[in-house]
Length: 205
Ligand SMILES: Nc1ncnc2c1ncn2[C@@H]1O[C@H](COP(=O)(O)OP(=O)(O)OP(=O)(O)O)[C@@H](O)[C@H]1O
Ligand SMILES: [Mg+2]
Image (cartoon, rainbow, N blue to C red; front, side, top):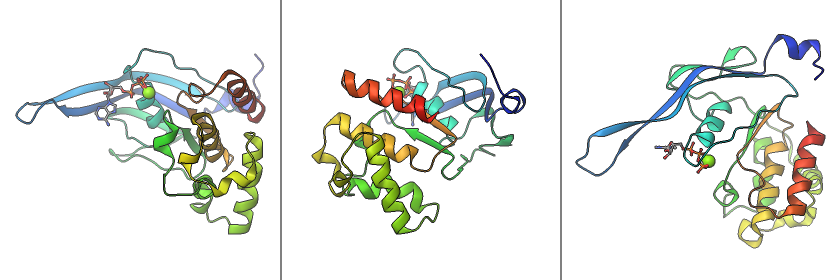
């Protein structure tokens, strides 16, 4: 595989001995348990690279994805984004628009009370993009994920699981992020749409 000089030098994302635990109680009188969801993970990811993560249910894949986009802080170890700590002192980091995630369950990741066009535009609003530009980008994003731009006026429950997942992909990509974490992004889709979305990811990458 050929790598350019930039990718040889500095990683975009780096995990160094990262662990994440959760404190859980099994019953009111039970003692608090420490559940080790992610243990001693180290890797680095350069621009243009992909990493696939495979493992049984409950082994920590989604937790690792949340750590990677700064939605969760690590319990120990270091997560570096472009050479700077992504989470500091137990506080998860936030890098507007650069790190995005397509969640495992598209129903829970789209607000049921928002028209999907508004939901897809939300990451742009956080970046201060004007309403006019944002509407144009939503329309072109919907076309990219093979959905009619007019569907932006509807609500999430009016769509099939596959359509909702494509909307979640549109929302994750609308800011042109540098890193997208995809948590089983095509498991809800049927084979032809599955292929379309994977081809789209490859083309955008
Ligand atoms: N917020 C949380 N609070 C407590 N425990 C959690 C929390 N999030 C995850 N866990 C636990 O951490 C472990 C890893 O969960 P995670 O969702 O990362 O697994 P996964 O590999 O994505 O599983 P699946 O393939 O089923 O999606 C599980 O035991 C889960 O119950
Ligand atoms: Mg998961």
